Image (cartoon, rainbow, N blue to C red):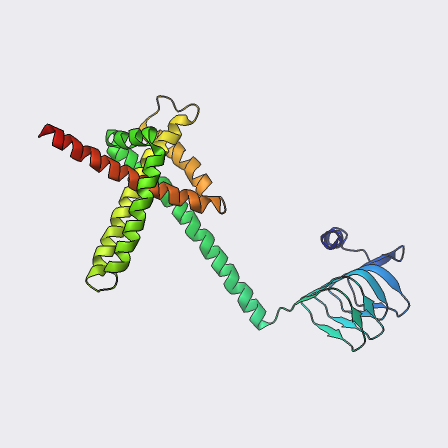
Length: 272
């Protein structure tokens, strides 16, 4: 009801009349007499003084509200850009919400806006990096990524499990190394190595996703990686689910590298 009335006021900006003694929409100072009963009051750019009864809501934009002792407001009171003065004895039976645009509020809104914009900008930059790096990796490495893709086709659950165990080990080792100053550079190097592994793994997964997309059969590795990365980025940017997906992609990438190294070592043992 409140949202509907607010939208109605904005849609009919010149309305200034009672509708069957029920709703009042105005753009000027407004007074509700003591014996007057109305359903809703919505005023923009004016002060409101209530002596009578309001059965639903009082909404004021850029104005002040004065509730006299004889007044009775049974619904919500919302004042944006103004103040509320309530005399003792006035009956307000629902919530009172007030947002005054003083210096502190303006500063808070400005800081919140900057923070939201910064978060959005960082998210866009992160998405751009996720788009560019796998494509470049697929272009540079080309056939070298194929073994990682085969590992993913063969045992994705195993890769996820191995990557999860490795991540726990990395976290524990990082905590132990960060205790001493000497260990901090090793932690940084380890994190850089994990990022490189994640990029390679993401390139392999992007190529696989790109192969599944219609029309990509026979296309180059870069095209497959580009289209596949686009799908992955769109999923990563989903609320809640995206963070979990990103973590799973990291675990799979770690699992890929671990299994690839193991296969290399097994082949060397067999050759000997």
